[in-house]
Amino acid sequence: MEFKDLDPILHSQLRLAVVSLLISVKEAEFTFIREKTNATAGNLSVQINKLKEAGYIEVVKQFKDNYPQTMCKITSAGIAAFEEYVKNLQAYLGVKK
Image (tube, rainbow, N blue to C red; front, side):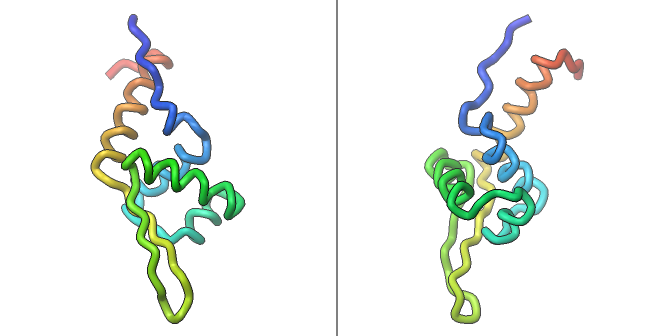
């Protein structure tokens, strides 16, 4: 059996949680992600930037009712990376497909 490296970007618990959440909802507001992950705004902001730099999510900053709003959206690269990560993790766990 060959073990493939797990994506270091997704291997962070909070980044994996963000991507998992976005896989299910496609896009979400920063405050929604913060509430769902119980992360601090500062830590979440740093992790979202890492996901953005990796090309896994798109971040759109806009205004809604005169308030700043940050929307995060999963990219096709993010979906592919997540699927690969899950597949490689299943190999570690010995899950047969």
